[in-house]
Structure formats: structure tokens, C-alpha cells
Length: 203
Image 1 (cartoon, one colour):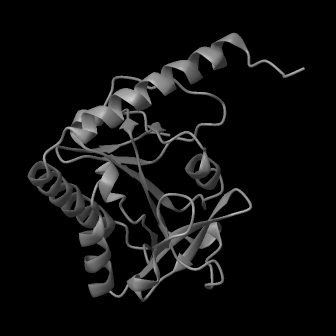
Image 2: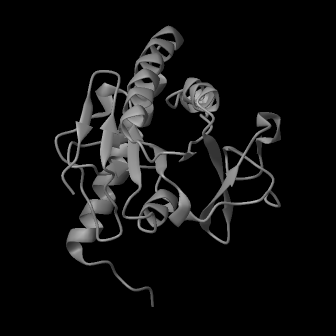
């Protein structure tokens, strides 16, 4: 017999599922020119934020899924390399995110999980050694909670980052909501960055 979720957690999961459908549909209607302009603004805000984090040397990014119109963070990658930072990208191993320093972006390829990953035999950086983690989101709220695609990879990773690390969720401003439903497994970020604002979360 399958175990049942507590009623409040079950309701949160239902609301999240509906929000995912709504936000994906809304994002899919965005013209490419709007995506480019909004992404450019987000990238500038993230780069300005990283400048204020004196310790930030090793930064984890994600490679955007263009067909899903995710925030295009490639300009952040370019800027970080100009600043001689170490840029990491994720793969999935045994159900968890693994972070790899990547110098050659041509190594990033779709390997079965729907996003571009480095080869799984690349060297990796332990999560606790990351200084900044930039995470995608389908929706965000000003308390730092983000809505992903539902697998929980980023929530589990964010639970393991160093106390001195900074976590940043990036999203378009129309993806901001007043409050996201949450469960005990959800992890808030320290910063929410959209094309219109930077929100410092008091965790």
C-alpha cells in the first residue's frame, strides 16, 4: 500500500503542479526579443551582485534550455571568465547534482536529463567548496523560495552548500509570486534576481 502525504503537503504539491503548468505556458508565450532583453538585465544584476561578494571565486551556473525559454545566463559565464573565476556546471549522478569546473563549453551536451551537462567523468567540485550557486526557477517569491521542475535536485544541493556561500535564484519578473507553497524539503535561496529587481532574503 502506498504511503500517503500529509494533507497540507499533498495540497502544496497539487498547487505546485498547477503553478508549473501556468508558469511554463506563460514563459512559452514570451517573444525571443523579450527573453533576450530580460536575460541581459538579469545577467547584469547577477554580475553586479557577484562583485559585492569578495570571497566569490567558484561559481555554479546552469546552461539554459532554450526551448523552455529559461533565463539565458551565458553572459554571466563570459563575464566570470573575464574575471578569472572558476565556472562550474551540473551533471546528475545517482539522483543528485554534481558540480564540474568547465573550461570548454563544447563539452556540455544533453545526456538524458533534458539539459546540457559536462561529461560525468569530468573532475568535480564538492558542493561545500562552491562560493555561489545560481539556480533556475519557474517561479520565485521574496522569501527566497523557488519553484523548479519538481525533481528536487536544486533543493537537495542547496541544503549542502557552505554557510558562507551565496545562493541566487534567477527568474523573469513576471515569475514572481506573493508566496509559493512549500514543504519541508524546499530550500530558500539568499538572493532573488529578476530583470526588475534584486531581493536580499533574510534567511
